[in-house]
Image (cartoon, rainbow, N blue to C red; front, top):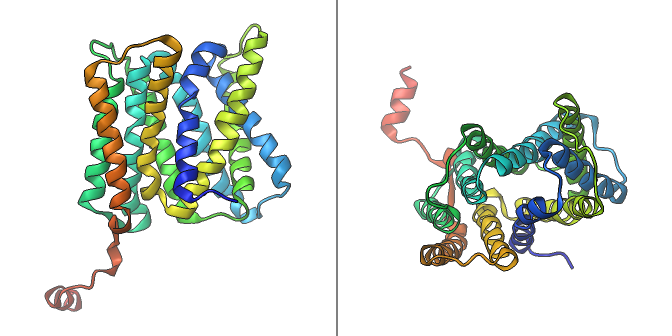
Length: 301
């Protein structure tokens, strides 16, 4: 039995929350190499399952979607994770839902309700309270990378909802990752971002990253977008930094401060409120009929 769209999207965002702990404890510190392995290693198993080739007319769209949802996102995400404190990088990722809601108007012709904007903004504030550490020095390259990663995946998700898909979700996800993996592998070779050696722990970490943190959650995420729309699942992206925070507490023994506990409550509240207003979150912009005065002015132009 397939999962409901929002449940699938929530499961994906929780699995993505494991990215930081696996990256810092199991993987080599080569961001482009890790991103390439993650994309190709996640895409190939899905391609073996799908066993189809998309229509030629769709190849251009798949390259664009793969670059946004996987290529740019993976590469920039790992650059940000290395150059910024984890809390700061996760805070920037919380901007993703806001970007998706805002991009829905120019790309989908939909206007977000005030309630939807309020829910997403409150969730971003809550995540900031949870993960942002005082006195953290900001690296400008890391900041731009984190900002770009959030914007890239938000734009990719919105375009996916606009264009639909030529075949199955598995096939769509697989081909995006394959195209992204080729791009990232080329970048890793050009900048020579390759590890000198790989230990057993590194290999296990790369396999886990490719299959459980990439292939599976991306299928779940795209299922959520296709079924519920980008605006409906956007607030669920806030579960990723919350999951990372909880894992950090359990694995590293980090004791949360009172302000962080308040932030968790704010995020949970924003998610619940965001789901409550989903049914009336958008109204189609072009459905507004012009007023009599606007119609007269149009005829006289």
